[in-house]
Length: 227
Length: 186
Image (cartoon, rainbow over all chains, first blue to last red; front, top):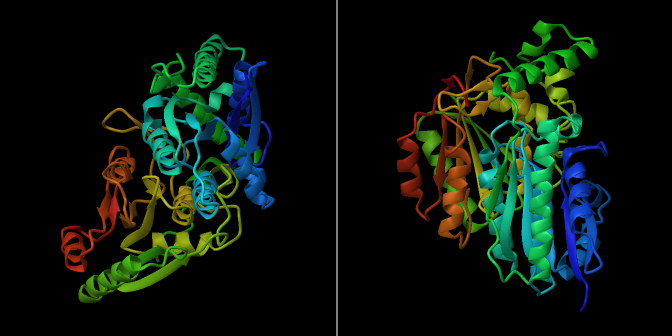
């Protein structure tokens, strides 16, 4: 049997290498890669900043499946990712071709409620429809910012286990040819008190500002106050 | 009264020309001073999620390009219209870059909305009315619904309109919106 190819589209706009998207991409690669499945990776930020998107589009076009991993920005895709996908659709049209890939996604947001990612997953479904692919489903993750920081904590380990299970199921779905039912949306929330999450987050912002030499009142600056 | 209109300069079509004509007419009739901003690809850097606008230079993006001009213009207007092509049911890339980089205008903290969802609280006591005006050829019903849901399901005090091939209809819809500054959460 020919190996199937799955391409992980890692789409954090952040400059650092250690992002939540990178963590999830590593997890996906470990869960999905096998003798029957070749897993490749596309780094969206790198591709766009190096003007190397077209080479990646060729790899994406040849893949049997795409797994798009990204953070939520203003309740939908970050500008960087929509640029990459918008231009991919134009490229396919110019090449007079269509994708045939199964499409999956993993969306994480800094707010604790995972359902807030639902519209972003629908955007990926629309992308799949309009480029010739088939949207199969996504994992919607709340409190994503904590995944990288607290990996050993039981509530994070449990969330990562659920996310890993989704990736494994996606891999099996690709290998089976997508003939079986697949969960459309899996929500993963941290089992962590919301109040503590807010307290920790709000303390974190103040602490970071302090490290940058700012005082508490500086956080509330209004540089564009109406004249 | 001031209006800021943000266009995607890479989608100049007959539709966008008609939309611009309708907006020009509407705001002229109402006596608004209008600022127009046309965003092309690579005009703005992408938001890189560094949160420098919250913890290094609060209220301002740390990337020095046109965003300071755009954010100042928006925050000093009574109404802002984002005239955006609908791409896969959301904002086009050029318009989404402007929206992403609007983040400095909010505070970093977490708060709970009346409906129980999370939000970042406002930095300013009031804001321009925001209108998301979508357009495009052959936009599916699903994508129209999604374009509306992205805003309506998560934001308050932001209007969503869709171009329906009629300048008169767009002006009538705009007439139903109070184009003035608003307070509270966004």
